Image (cartoon, rainbow, N blue to C red; front, side):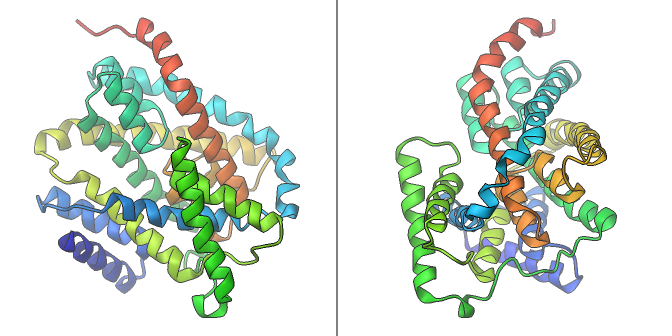
Length: 341
């Protein structure tokens, strides 16, 4: 674990030294990825990673003021496009993994579904899929999408990725910091006990939103907390490649990269349509429809100053659709795509 922390810290140092975007998130991702491919053993702390995600939940919940909530009905035209995009990903992704990459059906299906990494691994394992393959493909999806987006944002929209994601901790009242910590811990535990998906983010988000709407919270978590969350999330994603073999690089990693090309093309098509029809600004549309990790895209939204509520609402809907619909739709796909002889 100490070695993993050191490697992630070196990544932050180099990204800062070369003025690369999002050093606290992308630095640990790439440093841990390179170390994993080189055969360096690494291990993260899952409960600490989940704990860091609660910070992002509180950050989003604290933005959901009554004025922001009043804008939710205006999101309906783009929210109804989320199921359409999920369906397109499935109809293209399952045959890609099944026919072209030669995976068995459970592995192909759950590799294609753009849901939460942990949820897709759980469903895939229960269905008889290869959990190692699923882990590598979904980690690749998150890494590529999250790494590509900052360059899209800066190159096409001139987004400033150097903005601090919050105010310094020294400027936030101690009582507000205590309320945030309470929302994070209590919301997480309640959501976990009732079996809510994405409990470490959605539980704190809901509780912080309730406290914000009732006038109990007036600040977002400080910049230092958001940076810490980026560091641990980046380290966790990058260390997913630990133990990767050359065979896995040639087959699973290559399959994952090919799928990312498909995802990027689909994302560009939907974003261009949404932006062209005037349904949402380009930055918000890109962050809302890019099928990366919910936590990582929340970080990006916070850093570039996008409408965080808009972005999170679309990702929550995407993950909800995938989690609820995946087991049911899998049966339909299973009859259409038999194991190749």
